[in-house]
Image (tube, rainbow, N blue to C red; front, side):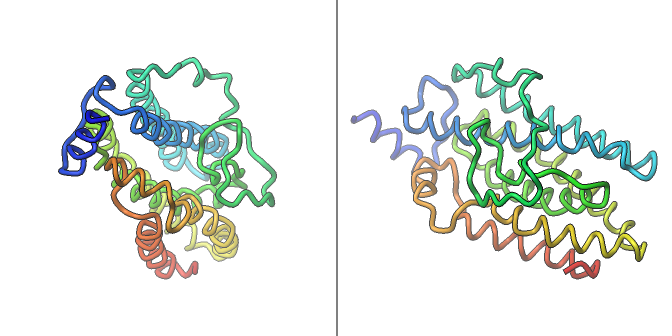
Length: 251
């Protein structure tokens, strides 16, 4: 008990942990949950976007889509390497897992997770063509950047290092999506479709930030696994994407 209190006080003062041998059991469980959610979301996002490559209108768009797919799988692999140091079974993430599985598009999952894996609920919904995929990438890409910026401050040093390393690439993914959307809205026939996709994806991406006044956040904040409340991250996301959408006549 004294050791547990000492570690929590150490974390509260800004200390960092660097080995699975040093972490309390509750910290270990919460950290693994955060990592599993990230890994599953990256793999599911990569698999879902892969089906959209053939919908791309040009070679450059195909290259950008392929780059995002490859790098998201790589990001998942880097975090999975950290999970393995805690004894996680990497075989769970074998290629035969249904990462591309999706629910019906009109299903209302809210923020609920499904039993099959730990992906965010937004990654259970299917994409509907190229325009829809680009809109989703813009909205979720910005959300991912905000969420990874938060996780890059995690008190487990090896994981913080991984998130800091992948953050620039996730920012680039969001930039590629926005560049693609700028081209789409120049075409009147695509603008209406893009507006419909914004209406569809906006609330689903917003739900990925979790519940306001979350009790679990209090535990994560005590361990300095998390620092910023869900509602603040959501507000930051709304401010950023609302400005982008307004400039493109999409909100």
